[in-house]
Image (cartoon, rainbow, N blue to C red; front, side):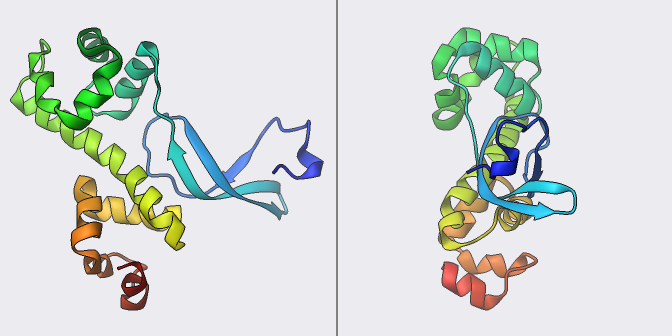
Length: 174
């Protein structure tokens, strides 16, 4: 809920938090308002990446978030797979080899980048209800990469290797 002093006058918004994104993406954020000497800021404790559902949106999403895919390649991919493109990335990425210009080496780079970008969202969804902040989730994603969720589910005590996660915290998560 927006604080009353800001209603109708929200031209600029300060958001505090750590977001593990290095490109322009649309986010849905949840948090609380904090008043500081600079005005109000939204302190984010949860966020979710909004995945586009149109062909143009998917093209923009892929070219902005996946290393190895520029707009021209994104258009080729979406031209071939249409609205099922992101399902292909999730469930059968080897089908991307049928797109002209994607070989095995490029496919590995694309898949790795896509998994890394999706990893943080999975981690936040899994750990936020347990009180783990988005900042700490980002640290996990950075430390463990695209396999972070697998590590969390199968070897949760590996979190002790991450700064800010001691045994007691990890034990509660496990």
